[in-house]
Length: 458
Image (cartoon, rainbow, N blue to C red; front, top):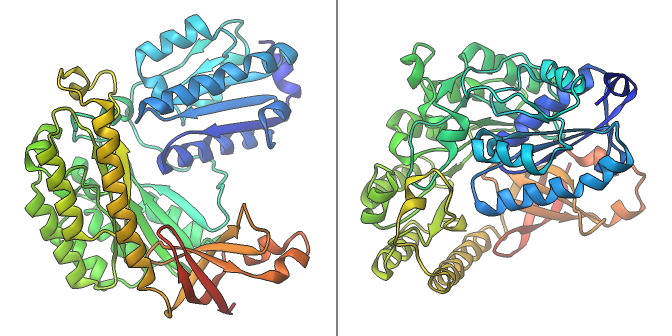
């Protein structure tokens, strides 16, 4: 690509796949691009710079990424000056780097999860080359004080650590994100303070395992419980959220903070993955079903109104019907308010993918249906208990499907839709007016996935 073409290019488009950590990474990429003079646009067709920021947690994420990348080829042919960069978790795997180099030669830059700090240098270096620039560095180091363009008007994503040391046998994250590295507490709190000063009502503290915060630094900056407590004291915030937690690292100190600090969300996302102790051992999860339920009991004791959500994998290699029944039994006991349920996806390079006892898809699909039927019923029951309550709701934006409805989240992370008929006759800035406001609403109806509220006060 001719670097002179880059000089006149003024628009960028970033497509993000995956989790909140990827979203936060994309906010940093956007910050870099705007700092050197680029403006956002709404589609790849309009863009001079297109970045795809990838996720590798599941096989369909790979498929989606390569599908999107293939659709960029005709755009590149029409606009030879277009810059295409691909980065994120998928590109930390050598086989995917090789696939890009051999099959997608119109890509200008390949970069990794740890390359955010040096992205501008990689960008300009790639712009001066006439072949794909491979700029993937090792997954190490932490990022602070990088430029950032936050994509949500109500929520500031704040990464507190990077990487993971757990090596669950089904998971690719330790290989794509590297080992655990914690950011200095002062840097994190400064970022939270800036977000609050800029009007954000919600902050979400991010890490592959936030409970392990500080362990790699011998806790010289304290642990996650102390960080969470200090963040919750920063003025101006409606709620401090966090994700994701690993059950083996949930300390009594953390549970105490959740019980004592009002602005810490009364919601805990605690991935279970399986209710079978045998499967948990083979997943290398390092807790038992009894230990998991003990954490649930402690959380509900210190914060009775707490909403509990989880992740569950169906069809892990070797899972028997008895193992699956134990998962159903634990779900019944824990009575999760919501759950993210996943069909096991083999990831190349993980121990579980090498096993010869993979489960037949027909069996997996049947188990998945039974699990979701149970959880949807529990979620509906949980949400129906909210009917008649008056709750505070942080408005997150206008509904994408109904122009007369605003959507938001309660402190315990329940989705609430609030019909406001006047919105359809309101000026174009109506969504901006309501978004990031905390309103009071009476819950009047409930479904498995959302509540309906009646606005009481702004």
